[in-house]
Length: 292
Image 1 (tube, rainbow, N blue to C red):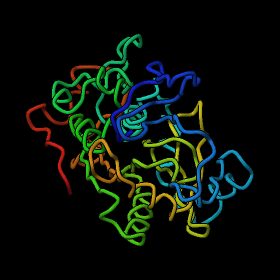
Image 2: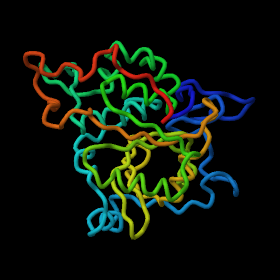
Image 3: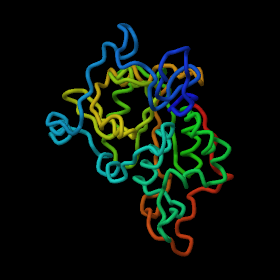
Image 4: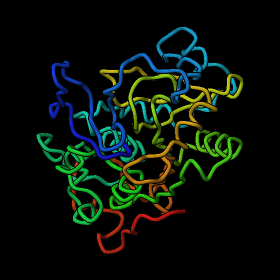
């Protein structure tokens, strides 16, 4: 979600026309669509290669065949989330990343002393409120910059790349390197239409790359709407380079790492005890979101 939005219960009437469904935004879409499924020729995605569902035989073959870069797939799939509301694609994606990287987490409501990230407690850190607040995100989603700030405020090391800064080859190398390395994660903020779907701005994790087909696996957090799919690298590159009209900047990618500490010093999500799961950084030390 990279644009301001109104949830679908705030629908708009036009004379005698039926209600427009989906997320209505100022200048675009977030997570869901108010567009007709039929796209006019020349619109983003009108020439996109059809996405390939992961659950299809061909999709499973891409995941399992030798040479596929899937270092992030196992841990992300373990923590796969469905976004809690129509504007929470960035929140659900963040929770997947934080849990899969085992960043120290607050207690999870209704789970006793167990600590793991949820779409509620991810807003609990005092430093988070300087970037985003839950009520505002539920109404309007997040820009790429706000998503950067949300993750950084939890102690993650975050690098932001806007799509218009990257050539196709630079983008391909970045995705490939990330998906060969289990120590970091990759979130994409993209326009669904450019990858052959209906909708607008959306955020989800990338989990695998098949170099033979040049396709990338998106674990779509709007699981009630679309399955996990393989999309072509060229289509995804165009999708992250599209302009988010709420910010006036292109969409893009976030690369997220747990901390600069050795992995063995970072306790995983689990039961609390003796303050073991204090945040890796204090609120005062969390860096502000900024361009790379």
